[in-house]
Image (cartoon, rainbow, N blue to C red):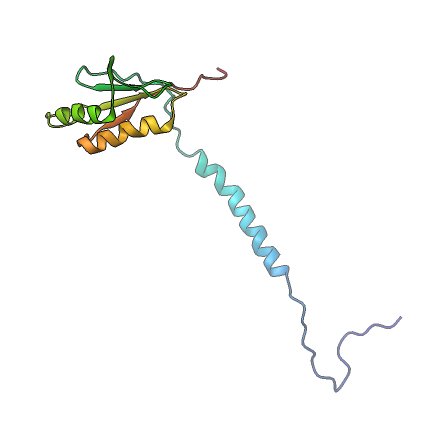
Length: 144
């Protein structure tokens, strides 16, 4: 059994083209240990009580205007049927000069076309209404 320990006499050192990954593995293991030690301290260092989810019911003020759109695309001002978008714009212009300006709340039927609700938003924009909100129903809660 013969074993070569070093270069033969007279030979020059050869260039080693392999990458030594031992230092890389050592550094990665040290970083992994540091992260494993510090993460539990960061996440549990300050005890806090997080807020619970709740659904707040907003009260409708009498000065707010509710504009509804049914499934057929007809527009209603509170309970009064508005025949055209131009008539809606004229009514909204009278309201837009009030101080403070009331909020317009849009109730759109789930089966209504987007175009019908878009006409109301466009009418509010043309009349100079600053606050427009949408009235929706929250999804049913599943589980406890």
